[in-house]
Image: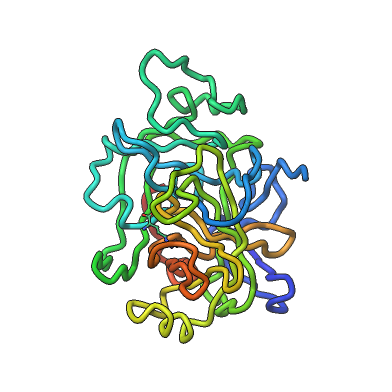
Length: 295
Ligand code: ARG
């Protein structure tokens, strides 16, 4: 049973769902950051453990190319365009990281030693690197229009939660449009269109747009399953390499929920063109049933 209250937003949204929306502030509850000291355009460098659900996706022997968010001890939420057509054996996921090496470690790299010196999950095969057992792309994903750009990756081993590895909450399916509120997007993607990517996790605040205004700005392929967000005055956006990562908003008790998945954009960081995200609340039931089915 779970109950989510969206602070300042809805009086109360109570949901009786699978425990992925857990209520008690257990150390392994979703959306909680243990570490709260005080390819993203605009924004700033984050710090280790601030976004403990962030996942970095690698294909064999390539640089980090997409991101994701840990949503259970075995599942990572990402974009369909990141993993569609990729064989699970070719996909690798890094959790609990902040400064990421661009490429996968070679066999000479010491196991169980994180690049950022953070705590390690002994269940991973060293370097907080996880293999992938299964990739579930949304059945109706349409690459050309980016419709239903959402996927779930099942890891080869269960994750041990730690201060730097936590899962993020999912939004309730009844979440309102959130227009004019601000969310945060984080990633290791490029800091400008055609620019270089960031070895350290970056984050930026992005205002959420009205979908109609977004459609006018973008021209097409803005659906009710799309969420648009981006700086209107100051450049603030996701960019290449941030795809699949979560758009995050704090809900009740400062628990963070993944309200969007970085999907696409027209170049990056142009104040007249917001970034486009898959609107997670539209898929909450699909995500929960997929996680349950493949638990
Ligand atoms: N498709 C890009 C990727 O694969 C993400 C682009 C997001 N772009 C933006 N301007 N918000 O990394």
